[in-house]
Image (cartoon, rainbow, N blue to C red):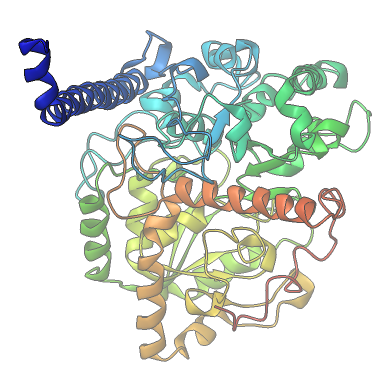
Length: 519
């Protein structure tokens, strides 16, 4: 006899199985969705927390310095086995831009800052105040309506390495994973180290830190990936100061850049040498805006300036240099009377130490003369650009062959070139030559100069520009492109060492720069 209970269940079995399957699917979907949501939330929380670490990881270091280690940098977004970003992340905008910062022993940077009173031995100059405000120096409190409030500082032109390091700490694409870094930054304050031992020390002492640095670097796993060719450092002095070619005690500087390991690295400095692995980036000026609006406001102000002088020169003669043209420039400026304004920066004079004095002269001038000085370059180049004053160059090594990442290749678009390498070639009358310049060309030149202002300033280390690229941004982009070109060579089976650290006797000519008609 058939069991009534069994019979009833069997008669409805298809509907019962379908019901159980439906309930099972609902439960499974709920479980997966809750797990997925939890993973996504957890990922967002981790990224936010780490972002907070970058911003808030500070210590009580002197002079407003902030401390950052690779452990505090935001981790990279995670990928699955196929290399695709996991759910909950967006496309990684830092691919190809990640930079790993070596956490150097303090003797190579922080200790030098702490010993700031010793940085100018043998002089009465105290460097410590200039290290305030992350290397920008003290704020100028009374700009006399010549400068803008809250964005001008008494910045020492030799503190580029400190300024750059502090800006790098806020770089948006830092990584603690060196294996995916496009470049490795070495925050060695080579210029400050050299300042400690410029006078009265033998070459062994002068080279001690440099030798210690390359030994430390060469023992790191990051070094072996490209044997240092993806490494770069920044110096606040001219590159020639680190290329002492002998061990004679009377020779100037250190031999950092001639050490075998250092030859594999690139150096960014305020003036490059004639070697291919040295690159020039702008001198720090005294203008460090914190907002794009401050730059736009300043540019508009320079467009409206009343310029009563045809040309001006801020500097001093260099009688110790036999072929210096500065004496001739000063003579012609004085002879031009009301057409030229001379700002005397002779030894002992303090006129040029005050940016208010310098900018007042440049803002009231149409042209600013920029002859070579102790070396090919000078900070005055960038002061004149800030003032909307058209720079007049006499040698290609002063700007054209130097700041290839920051100034236009077409140098005739923003400057005047009067080719006079030394006094024996002087055959010009400055007053007559500049007076012949058509008014429409002057207006075009000035506008191009004013457009360059964002590219040559180092904006505030405590904020980021919304739309503009500053001198730091362009320097980082330049070195990333340089290193990527080496990787392309490696992928093509070429030797990246060929030409990397070669000397180029024609670097300070127009051979690689163009004829002024490039873009």
